[in-house]
Image 1 (cartoon, rainbow, N blue to C red):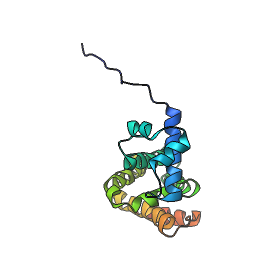
Image 2: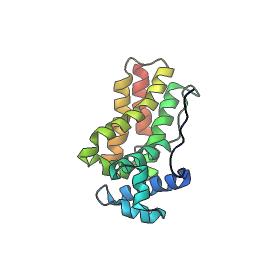
Image 3: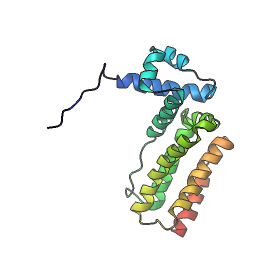
Image 4: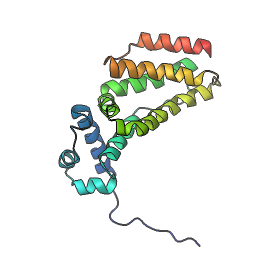
Length: 183
């Protein structure tokens, strides 16, 4: 019979974890990667740097987890609730709103400027693509799926992070119409 082990130390406080990740996301958005310190985050959340390093091995791991946390706050799109077009519109709008109405967009941009994080950021971008893939697979429109996702996310990230403006509903709708007409 396999022996079960219990984690050593005190159990992690999920509310403190949420607070640390939210604070980190805000700090990254306001000060960038190099303008954010673990001491600043520890002070703002009423914990210690040592407590942060027990949860995350370094500042980069904390910053990346904060970014993942920010993306997890985007409301999920459940394919098949409406139409292919509307599912894509809902998923794209959710991502767009998160990039503009939360610190996620500025934090993402701050981390993109850090070359040492490029590989992990690519994985996070891949996680976002998976949400869109689920929609394409559900609607059995996989022939041009990757190119279509490139167009959608490329447009959203470019207009949001480079041009620093929120895409209009009309722009997104026209892009989705061009994608759905090919599929």
